[in-house]
Amino acid sequence: MKYSIVGGNIVTPEFIIHHSSLSIENGKIVKIGQVEDKEDFKIQLNPGSFIFPALINAHDHLLGTYYPRVGSGPYLNWLPWDNDLKSHNIYRERNQISVEDIYLLGSYRNLISGAATVSDLIPHAVNDPLIPKMPVRVIKDYTVEHECSSFDLRWGRGISMEHREAVEKNIPFITHLEEGYDEESTLGVDILGELKALDEHTVLIHGLSFSEKDIDRIAASKANVVWCPTSNYFMYKETTNIKRLLEKGVNVSLGTDSPMSGGLNILEEMQFAFSLYQQLYQEEIDYKTLVKMVTTNPANAFRLKGLGKIEIGSSADLLIIEGGETQNPYKSLVNAWFDNIQLVIKEGAPVYGSNEYLEAFKKSHSHYQLIRLNGKEKILIGKPIDLYKRIWNNISTEKILPFFPIDF
Ligand SMILES: [Zn+2]
Image (tube, rainbow, N blue to C red; front, top):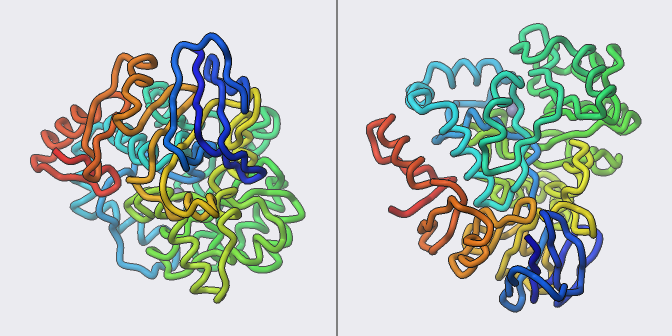
């Protein structure tokens, strides 16, 4: 399949090209600023549209996709929150839904907020069979630990072995770290350092109790950090020392965490990150810095070739938005909400968008449904209406989840 997208402004953290076009063939970007002669179809954008790389949500637990949030922080560390969650009736309600359906819900939560790729931190035994069935791209190549403390949930085979495999395969080693203020949690960076598991393959989630020395060590070792401000603030009324991480040049990405502790979606996460930074430091974080945290930075952290950017040969993973400030497209993306999203494309195929792009969906998929979302007519890949009906059947109530607000 070969087609072009014409009439939008291409925006990446590196450049902006006004009134340009993209040619897409076999899921990849093949030309920028030129339209091919023989194409299967053309997507004409409205003037003023912005074409971004599709977003990457750097931290989620798809298995935890449910609502409302559970917990009564501030907590000392993640363990009492986990206990509160697992003894709550909302957790029991969630467990009436099949794991595959919860994963589909999590996929849609990401797709309709512009994230075509998500990092799902969980043991491989849980997500390996589900990943090929998901409409969103779930990162499949990683090694994992839950945390690096004596009381963690033992998701991996031990830090050294997981990290070594990551280096051998050139994939990320991902773990929560220093998510808490007890003595052991605060030693996370030291423990990884001693085990020689702190390098550019390492992706550290949260880092609430990172000291200045920890951050210097992370910067020197080129390890990566994922910031989850909404989840941190909900559970601890605190967050990591984001200012120092940025000053030291650490590769920081943004993640939502699951909606049972974190933000509704990656759009809300960017907005909360902006306002929290302002509240903490009485200065603004650059909008472009936040856009990097959902595009190029996670692509680097998770070693995802051809994602998070728009260039010839990269995957045609695109997010097209409309409205907002035309003078500063980065600000438009940070402030975007459901209504601003026109189209989400994953590997060249539209997966979510406005009903005016119906022809493009017809040419790309056999399964999609017309839905009303947040009051607007949209098209979504798969069978989202059937999913909602199954969930209602399981939980015996017609619940609408605010991160996936279909109007019935
Ligand atoms: Zn997490």
